[in-house]
Length: 275
Ligand code: SAM
Image (cartoon, rainbow, N blue to C red; front, side, top):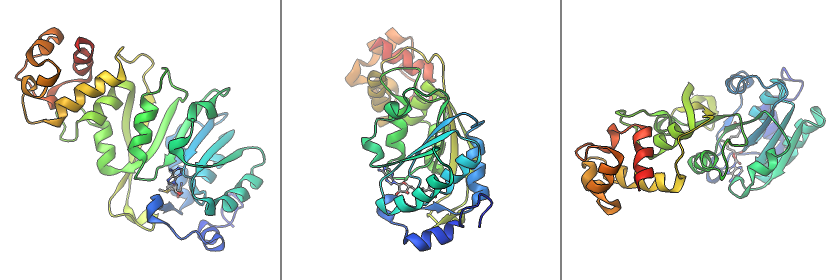
């Protein structure tokens, strides 16, 4: 038995035949000390509702429940995992709800409705991680339904999320994350911590939504950053030509000779407003 009174994850995987599928981005964390560290990065979970995407055999799910989450709602696409997750639900009566389905088709705000102190925590499938993050950063209404997000990404993606102006990794994702949240890398996780090991290092990113992000339309901001970073080595008067070039830049009070990577989030917001 493990520390939580449930069988070790290796046994769970063997008993339920959960050989990892690459197509589902399955790289499992089997060390409960490590999943506990991810859960701790999510902050004080007592009384919290935690939304998890992709619980798989349940390593992080178990850590979140052990960490004191009042309720975990976990969305898993792989039906093979459901029996293993049902055992965890039995062990923590009334505290784990498993939703069998695709996270890309899930209305997360509806899952959170009626609950306060909602947190998102997940070791995300690498192929949909960025898409989910962008959706969570651009909901129809702000403030969002969650108080924080604690998410595992490939290190390279994590660097793009937390990048600041002037950083090599600064681009569309960094502007979006910086606009709506305070984002930082909590810690790295080496490939050998996963089963099977991925090719690259992963990082846990902690995002806290800004109470009052600059007032900008998300779609317009995306158009500006797409054009600016689409030709990141060019001066803005060139890369933003299709959106109005010099005239747009003048309205926003930004020199046309600058390049996208030097602009702060506030300056991108000014450009979006001018557009
Ligand atoms: N949380 C587990 C852990 O840390 O060991 C598993 C993480 S694994 C990187 C990603 C999980 O997401 C897998 O269990 C996979 O089946 C699930 N998954 C993949 N695509 C999904 C989707 N579209 N919707 C919901 N879950 C998905």
